[in-house]
Length: 207
Image (cartoon, rainbow, N blue to C red; front, side, top):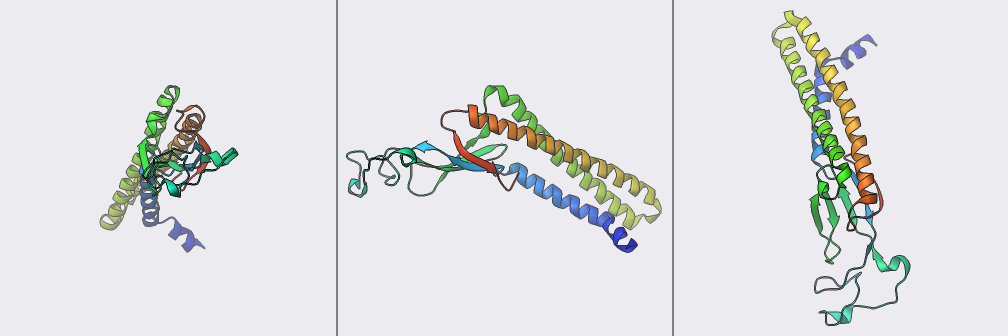
């Protein structure tokens, strides 16, 4: 049992775990998959590149393939998907039959009252990644000391303690940044521009 506990407290294992956390946090920070869902949008007019799930227009090419029907309720709408992160929001292009996405900056949708909070959440997430980088650096120095200067183990333990503090502080900042971003996103979903009205949404893998 003691051997197992000693192995779990190994500086090398701590370094590998912190490095994995840093990689995943950095990847998630740049990802646009924090939230995903569907919008409820009135069907667009048919066009030469749009022949399905659209409103017929006289004179459109391939008009014979367009079936007009008296649609009511949700039949009058399409439900394009979207996904968003801290920096980008990408939406399914409803004006083409072929699947395509168009992306824009998330900050362009955020209401003016939430801009400061949005950038504060971004700052906290960047600090989270930065503190993980500091923790990885300290742990790597500890491993070097342990390998090449075994007589200075006390310095290595001190570095390990500072690395643990950096990791814990970074985790707390990341949690606060996550919560603030979700508050900004929910406000944007309810008070944002008319061309972004989520019908349903939830957390995605990067969150």
